[in-house]
Amino acid sequence: MSFPALALETDQYMSWNVDLRDSREAVNNYVNSKMLLKLKRPSIQRAGSCLLAARRVIRIFRRPFFQIIEQWAETSPEVDVFPPRNYSGSYRNESIYVKNVFPFILPMARNMNVNGVYFGTDKLGHFISFGVRYYGIYHRAITHGADEKTAFKKVVDFGLMSEVDLVGKIITGVLSFGDLEANFQGMLFFRSLCDSTSAFHLKKDESNGWTLSGKFDIAQYVNGDWDESYNESGFTRARWTGSNGLNQTLRKYCEARNSSRVLQRFEHYQNSFSRSFSQSLILDLENGGVFNHRRDYNFANACSNVLISGTPDNN
Image (cartoon, rainbow, N blue to C red; front, side):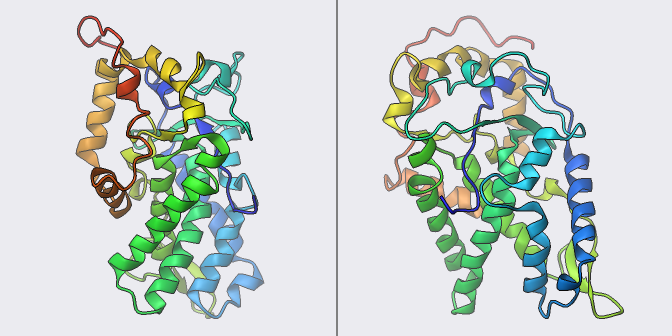
């Protein structure tokens, strides 16, 4: 429980019929302004290495458990979210996660849109918090002589272990592959902070202190695999079965999957983003039968006995 983030539940299926304003600019402005503010602190200006300066500046977005950046996304009027903040209904009871599962019932993360990708606000917490942890593993591997591919594999192995045993499946009954992708992209962001060839990085200024070169752009890291209705999660049997289990609650979206709105959204994901090393490795493990956490409990199986009528609608 001392891990830097706990997995919130989020329901991207609920946003299939919703258009949210793109929050790319809001996220970028928030990250850039907060980092510039933190850089003014003497402890960062005195940092002897870029890596130390980067670790210290990123703390402005972090805290134990729920991360500061995801709380900002949940509460900032600059971020368009669904359900809306004045929502009078019960998000959990109307979501696919209506069934309570022991041992923990965690809050629900709202949906947001960045560059046409719909994802839970919790992904920003994973991006920052686990991004730093991933980078620590990557950096140690590289320092001990590993090549980039080997170091990336160590990072992904750690992420899979954490989702299965520590902060995902064991706590919520949900193994989020969207979380894993946000984790990996967060590592790439943190790595870029000390890469002088990156469009956004830390550099020394005229007084030998630290400053920022360029501007942060979250769109460089967000991709369709952050969306849990596209990059489906894995579930425990406890989550899946029963009258309120996912085998039942997912069925109300079977017909919507063929709507023009959803087809266009998923086509945007497929055509606009390249698959990351992390996602590629996970798919290879699944195809090889090594990692089977979403083989049986998935959207297609929930809809296998549901009659889908008509043709895609024009929503």
